[in-house]
Image 1 (cartoon, helix red, strand yellow):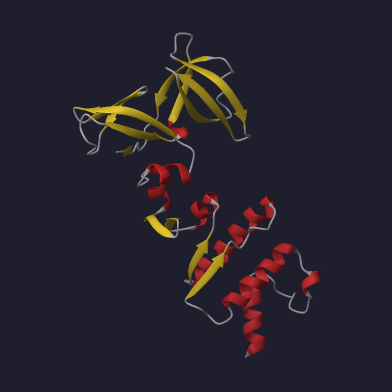
Image 2 (cartoon, helix red, strand yellow):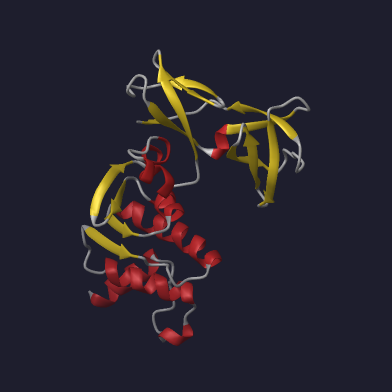
Length: 230
């Protein structure tokens, strides 16, 4: 029975035929799979993964994330993943509990945390964003890039609007109010820093959209959720 279970587990984690190998004969990725097989051996209802890939090189880490997800999801096992890597949390989790000083400050889907953060701290922690301060009047928050529904923010008080960088579209325009002051090519996309009325904004655009450094630009907000942080 034990040999049968071992064979079953090795098959689940993709290590068929490697049961007789010693640890030093396995690659780093294979050793990670062995560790996962050991965790699954007693058929648990819950598995804890505590920073499982913190010492793995980035390329292998991405591969292991995908492999572990493919292995575990069909088994119906609940997994609690502890991580400081937001991309890791976003890519693997169905739900995320965001903690600060040992307390859960927000819980929800990855989309909830990214697009509807509960606080300024949560907004900054889960990803880059433009926090624009505006005045609340007539149910709207007025900011340098436009007005947005106040969503219950206190009238006549200042409120902050969170605009994620991928929602800011840049259009080269000699008469535009914005100026591209920095540009970082990242391969699949480009990070732009744009100065608008004394406020520096960050925009992430596909690398196929080329906006030269120093260009004047007009800024348009792509359709998307823009939360107001009162």
